[in-house]
Amino acid sequence: MHEILNDVFTWSWYSEPHGYDFNGHLIRSEDGNLAIDPVPMSDEVLEAITALGVARILITNRNHTRAANRLRAATSAPTAIHERDAGYAEAQGALIDGALEPGARIGPLDVVAVPGKSPGEVAFHWPVRRILIVGDAVIGNPPGHLGLLREAVMDDPARLRQSVRGLLDLDFDTLLLGDGVSLLHAAKMEMKALVDGFPD
Image (tube, rainbow, N blue to C red; front, top):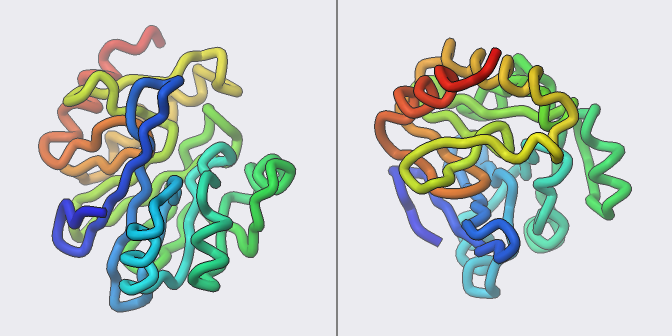
C-alpha cells in the first residue's frame, strides 16, 4: 500500500483477464477513514489498513465489492452501496450494511450518481482537494489516458456516456480509478478528451 497523495492511500491487485490493475483506496479523514472498493490484499496490506483504521467501506458499484467482506471482518466497518446495486451485490455474497445516497456527504466526500454501467453506480468527489474517485464509469487504460469498459458489460451505454459527460461539471484535477492507472494531474483534461470522442 502506498500513500500516493497526502492522506490518500492505494493498493492494487492485477487482473489477468483485464490486463491491468484493480485498485482499492483509503482516505484518511478526521471524521473517520474511508475505504473505497477494497481489492484483494496481502496480509501485510491488511495489517497496514487496520493499523490506520477504517470507519466505513464504500462501494461504487455492484461489481466492486471484491474484498469488502474481508476488510469488514477485520475492521468491523460497515459496508455501504447504492440501493439499486445492493441486491446484485448481496446475491454475490457481499455483506451490505447501509445505502449510499447521491447528494449526501460522507466525511469529506460527496456522493455523485453515475448510472449506466449499473443502475446504482456512484462516484465520490472531494471538492476541497479537487479529487474524483470513480469505480467503473471510466477506466485508466491505456495508462495515462481514459477509456470505457466494453458496452457488453454495461446496462445502458448511452446513459453511462451521459453520466461521464456530467462529471465534467465537477471541479477536479486528480482522478482515482478502480480499474487501471489513476491520473494524479490534469485528469479533467483527459476526461474531456474521452467525452469529445463519444458518438452522442
